[in-house]
Image (tube, rainbow, N blue to C red):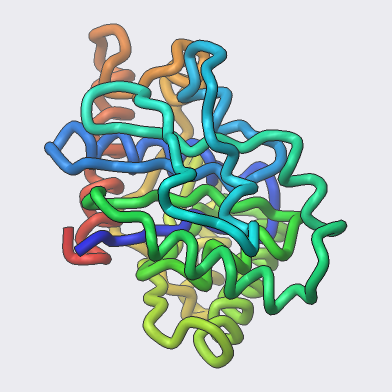
Length: 255
């Protein structure tokens, strides 16, 4: 049975796409046949996984009333990992006939119809409601990175409310895997205080924490997961943290 994980947040810059690509890489490295779906018009996940210009099916096709599973031609990124890329057509979704709820249900049906994969990882946008709601409507679980600042925590609270609405109206089976604390600085007193606020607000926090590590950004520049970076103590720590988080995320949907 194919599992679908959405990576979502309502505030940009929290590390959502970085988490999505690492979850996809991690699942693939464990032998899980994995499809990464980029529903973000900014196409950052596409840029990080698509190494060459190839003919492909745009993820915008998932919103098409005439969608057929035979249309899907994902790009193979590496062993066990495929990509359904984003392109400019996602920006035109506002012009597609039909109300938002119709489009959300359409992409939910399209994503759930995709077969042949153990896992589908969906990277959703922060500022395109049809796309992020469609991803949540289709998903078995949603994971959300959050940084320790006031805006990040406010976004986390809003996302929690959005998840509750999705459960009530379109996807009662949606599980909130949890919030992944990202770019945490244990030496910053404010980070400790804000982490305590998250717990006081009863935000569902994952056990694994990603600390501030330059190795993560370096890996993005090399278009590879952080655990394939140069050997060294800093890289090793970043790799352990990311692997542990990805393992915890997959466990949230019984993988």
